[in-house]
Image (tube, rainbow, N blue to C red; front, side, top):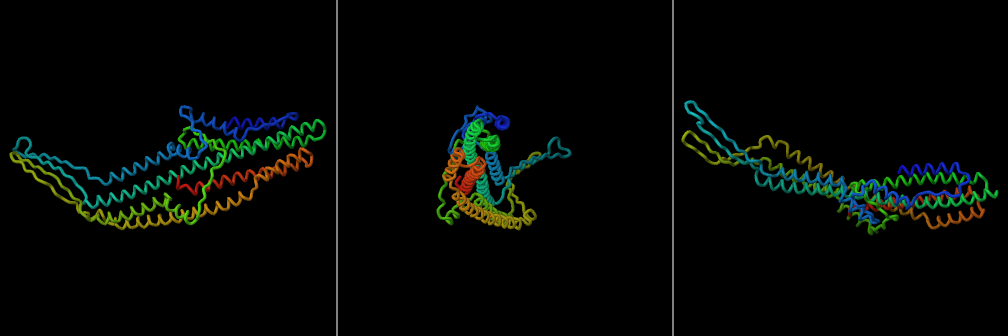
Length: 424
């Protein structure tokens, strides 16, 4: 972005000091988008082929495969899953060997070898296995929710890139018209049909456009680089200059029900609540003694004895208050589930309402009419029907409305992206 900022500064300086220049040109729109792509390739290193696409689905597939944040979340989920499995396996066997010595006996008088294995009652393994399955499903739901969040961020960046390109094209048109007017009024100035004030007014207008171009180009560059960062630093260029087509949601209540049924945060909360309830059952079995079996061999000077070892550990103290704690955790998990459902429903209904309001605002803009009015204003000022000041006042309002229209359209597409995030 440095060279574009410097270019904009030099352009402004040139416009301010040159009274006899004939033309003005600005870099924006699709041209700048191509240059951003070139910069992105430099940043991403050409050791990896650059992905170029105008399809958001292709971008999301790449991000899903390359996102370092998502890969870290996957590995963390895998580690937690393996930890759960390790907590429901047999204890390690123990081996003990003892040597005995006695007065009057040369060397070892006797020895004892004990090999034992402790384990819980079989029903506990089954209960813990089911609880761990539910916990892993909750973990998968949480991971899926994070994956959708990351992909939604990538989709929103693609929408931003389209928005900045469209605004850039509008600025390109605005600067082109202003440059043509500058050439016209400089010609009139030479014949005495225009004043130096009018020429300076056009030059100052071009300065303002240059500032807007620089800001828009910087935003476009930042969005493109953020997309590369989401893609794990692998070069990716989203080339579209149009917004994605939105899908009709159909019946609102049916859509809300489908959204809630597929919401990953709700699914994760449901599995957590079931796992917490299963934990109560596990702790209720905590009074069952732990069993231990093994083999014992004793040797004396001439004789050896061996046999089996059977024992148990009675949980008089270790299970104290565990059932109460499990019940409290289950209550907390159910409350979290209720909150997740309420929050998701409030979110989806808020999005639906915001979409209606935004679509109504977009519909209020008549873009063909505004562009036609710009052409008429240009013809009028060139024909001397209106003053240059009147032209810029009227045209400025129209350009502002066109920019607002593009921005609202982008906001609407982002809302639709959030609406369908459960399909990512």
